[in-house]
Amino acid sequence: MIGAEHIAGDTLDFLDDVPDYPPADGWTLQYRLIPRFTAPVQAPVDISATTEGTQYRVQVSADQTAAWTAGFYTWSRWVEKAGPIRQSLGSGQFEVKADPSVAAAGLDTRTSARRIFEAIEAVIEGRASRDQEEYTIAGANGSRQLKRTPIADLLVLRDRFKAAVESEEAIEQLAAGLGNPRTFGVRFNRV
Image 1 (tube, rainbow, N blue to C red):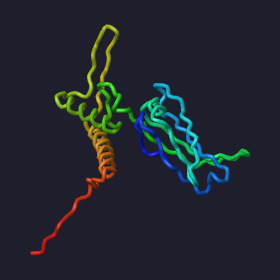
Image 2: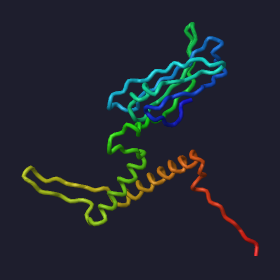
Image 3: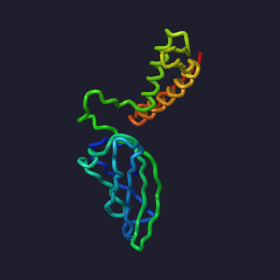
């Protein structure tokens, strides 16, 4: 099945095994990738798998994936058979990431959790020199009031997004074969 992420411009290529609906029985496997964003416009992507023995080959060329807009997508997967017969096999989400080999200067490759965490930290740092959480400005068109998020609320949000970032980092380290950074060993020496 489709992984958690894919780089635009890389070939998508994997074997998918659906033992209950083998190609030999006349089944075909289909995927549809539906953007979870509205701008910029990205049409849904339909993929028809080919057969390879008892499995299905899901393949999209690098030229085709290069046109995919970076962002989150929902994928759905099903089999079809003449008759017409259709059976859904599941769905999930994955992220298309921008191709770093063609990226323009200023490409932000941070995850959403990392961007939010760093923005909250910047607000907390900027607020360290301000005393007031709310003030009113009188003007010709009446007064305007500005309220800031209380520091206590910002600290709760910061901790929540810090945990999300640490989870992402742990997953990346495990995927790279570096072990879980949250696991540590203890050695006892006999005296």
